[in-house]
Amino acid sequence: MSSDETAGGAATIRSASGPIRRARPGVDLGPLDPGRGGGGPVDRIDDDEAGVFALVEQVRRIRSLTTGGVFDTELGPLVDRLRDVADDLEAASASVDERQAHMWSSADYVANCPVMGRSNVLAPPVEFEMLPDGTIRGEITLGLEYQGPPACVHGGIVALLFDVVLGRANFHTGHSGMTVYLDVDYRSPTPILEPLVITGRQVRVDGRKIWAQGAIHAGERLCATAEGLFVSPGSLLLDNRARLTGA
Image (tube, rainbow, N blue to C red; front, side, top):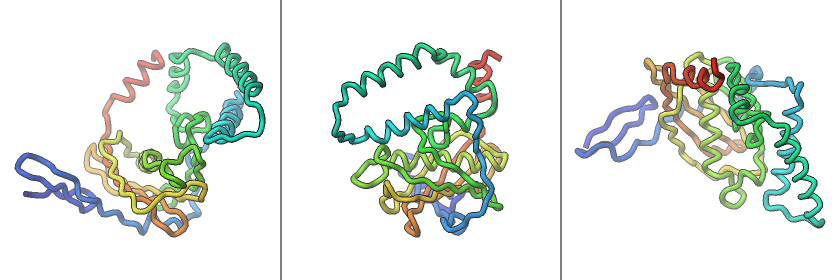
C-alpha cells in the first residue's frame, strides 16, 4: 500500500487496485474557535421592496409549526385558507424559467441560498460575519424541521451548512470554486434548539484547486469538522448564467 498527502496533512490510503479511503484531514481549530467574534457582516441583503422576505418569513413560521405538528383546533378551515393563498400566489407567479432569469440577472446568489437566503424557505437563515483573518463565522439555532436523530441535527443538514460556509469563505478571498469533495467528521451530536456557531476559512490554493476547513460548535463542544476541496469551473457558471438569463 502507499499514501498520497493532501492539503490538510492527511493521506489517501491506496492499494494496488486504487484508493481505499481518504484519511481524516487535519483541521486547525485555532482560527475556528467559536469564541472569536467582532467581524463585519457579510452576505446581508436587507432590501425587501417587493415584500418577498416578509412573505418567506411567514412561510418559515408555518414550516416550523407544522413539523411534528400537534394542534388543539380543527385544521380544515386553516388548510382552506392556506390553499386560497397558495392559489393566489400561483396565479400571480412568474414561470420557473422567468424566475431563474430574474435570479441570475445579477451576480447575487445570497438571497436564494438554501442556508443564507432570505427569499428561500429552506434556509434557517444563517447570518455570517467575516473576521479580520478571513474566517467566516455564523450563529444559528435550528428547529425541529432540521432534526434527524432525536434532539440532533440531521447529518445532511450539517454537511449543507459546511458546504455553504466553506464556499463563502472561498468567495470572500477571491478564489472560489465548485465542491469536489466535502469530508465531514461528526465529532459529537449537533443539537437542535441550541445555539450553534459555524466557522469556515480557506486554507490553501493551488492553481484551480482550493481547500477550505470549518467547524461547528455548540457552546464549547465541538460537534463536527470538515475539509472541502473546490475547483474553479472555468466558464461553466458564466455559460449557465447566460443561458438562463438569455444574455
